[in-house]
Image 1 (cartoon, rainbow, N blue to C red):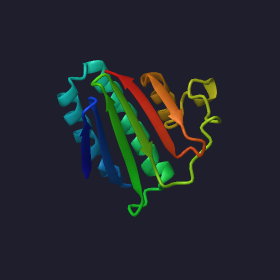
Image 2 (image 1 turned 180 degrees about the vertical axis):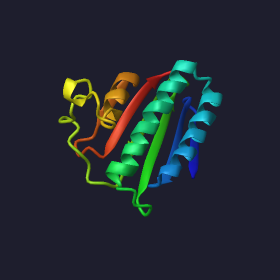
Image 3 (image 1 turned 90 degrees about the horizontal axis):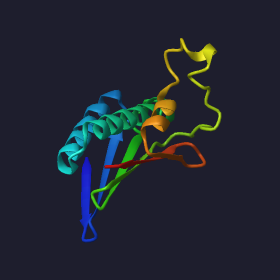
Image 4 (image 1 turned 30 degrees about the horizontal axis):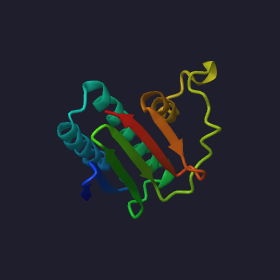
Length: 143
């Protein structure tokens, strides 16, 4: 379910609630496609937003909510003056210590099949802010 609110100061708010199932990613991708068309994302911005939000949402579903379909992943978006996107992705899980994530570029981690999501997000978003509990992530993009 996607809700949208537009304000006269050229700000728009969107909210999206997803059940904690991997197939919810399809709804997220459709949401990003709609945003890309409306705000005319460049190919680079589209790729960065899609990658970061997919990674954050999959992490919220698998690690945060433990794939419990009764729990939700909440995605809020504030579009400021058609120039900035501020996404907030949160889950109903316990959170995690985002300051102690193993470095995926360290030699001992190079062959690991997982553990790169936060690293990728931090490289692709203009700004990445975790709440103190580690169950909410704010991502900023300039468009």
